Image (tube, rainbow, N blue to C red; front, top):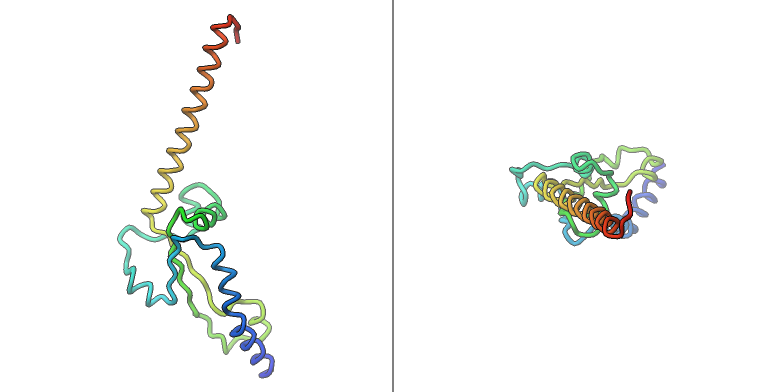
Length: 150
């Protein structure tokens, strides 16, 4: 049992950079990464505007979680990512270690950022509605000009 634990720990240490890179490929240029909660608290503190999880942001915007991930990857929103080793790794059975990550990743988005994205989504929808209305009006005018009735 001890030998298996050593092998799993050794594999994780050897592949930790590879595991972390897999997560990082989904981050955009505006993703801010903290190595611990302490570092996050020191730099960000209690953000006055509030922080929400990516799932909470998706709910506030009426979109799915993957859209939030897409916005992060494209660098359109700022996401604070915090690595946390909150698991007592040594007390876990070896078979759990093989399927669970050693470090957990938490993500937060400011409520102000969510509101900014919401405003941009509304503006985009309004612009689309305006274009469609203009297209319909143009079509009606053209039909009237040619004597066609709808």
